[in-house]
Length: 588
Image (cartoon, rainbow, N blue to C red):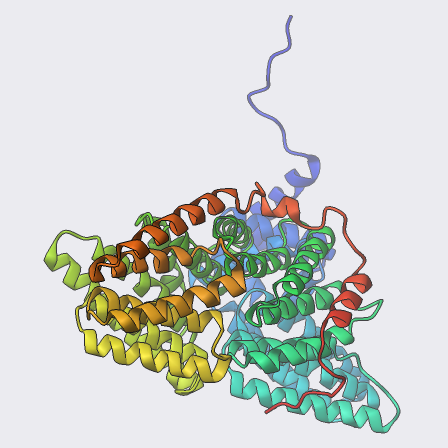
């Protein structure tokens, strides 16, 4: 008789036992807590799989239980599934655990150093998990409690612990856009470093300097971020945790991108992607972190199609790990929304970009206050998309509604940026530039001109006269003068300036050149200079042929370190290439 496929495959004996325990959960609850960590976690995960979230929440909200669950080996991604499901269900397990830990730290304030050290170590694990899961406010509370314990003793061990605590605290404050508090945290870490130095001790500064680089980058202080990334790279030594190395490489790459040091950025981010994939695996959140920064690099070097693919991969990983309404998922949605918008700009197909922008906003508004800075960039992306949809809309009423919605989103983003960064900041300038484009679409030309000029002035003072951001704003003002205000001489001068910057930074095949070339063709047609019309038609044809040949790599991930270097080789190559002197930068 031929073998037939079984319609039912029995569970393993172990899984059957776990199911039996869960079926008798109410009676076995106390006994479950005495099981080894991995077995205890498997029981709780079965509760999650059966949708018994109230019972699971009751367990995870107890600090001792969750402490044991955190010790389960190789279960972290499954723990994220459970934890996010509870948060989505309305069980505020993150804040409950943070508050419980804070109370415990208050109780043991008078205990001996060993008890405090044990609590600090657990706080690092708990706060680290909450930080990895994106619950920055609760992680901050945990690390502040740890820091308070560190200050109660003067031993050198507690100075080391305080430095480590400050690094973790700076990370969560960066993630939560608390930049002023982040600067205070960095200075506090420096004071502990000084105490150690007085006793002849040194703590590695790579992680601390990397977090400072991230803070300065977020505030658009790009020169300072670049200088501190060099300091962080100098601190990378053999034996440093891979996570720290990866994070420093990521931040240094982003700092290089905005300084238009693309070759350095490429080497750094590709090595970070390689390390994360090899050490953590291709389904780990840390790997997705590196992919988002790789996508940022690709987008900025004009490899837009590949950046979309990389951002999609990063989002897929984060959704598989966290799912639900999670801040990490929201930021991945936003990055994918913007890259999709840029990718489809010439086609006008913005459905996918709009979907991801709206998902980002929905998640952030569900988790965070309505005036949180993270909403500024998400609203900006949605506004850009709505404006393009409105322009292509044939219904006047719908067009006006979409433009007004985009206007409200841009104004909200501008106010959030000004509140966080002030008037004289690159982020604020970007919002002015976006409003300028929108006013042009709304046929408010004087207001558009005012916004563009303001954006250009701020960007030139902060970034110099030949930066990519300046070129964008210059090109937009040229378009306004050309298409709507008939100021052809000014438009021509601005187009040529934008083209010169684009070619210098990105080469002859830069995608942004298309709009400047088309603008010049229209301009010369308008003034009757047909010799120039013919010239720029030829230029545009040459550009199209060049674009067809550009970026022949089929998969950007296949291009990542096929013959990987050692980390120290990458670090040394970077340090040898940078031309800054040995002077140590100061925090403004």
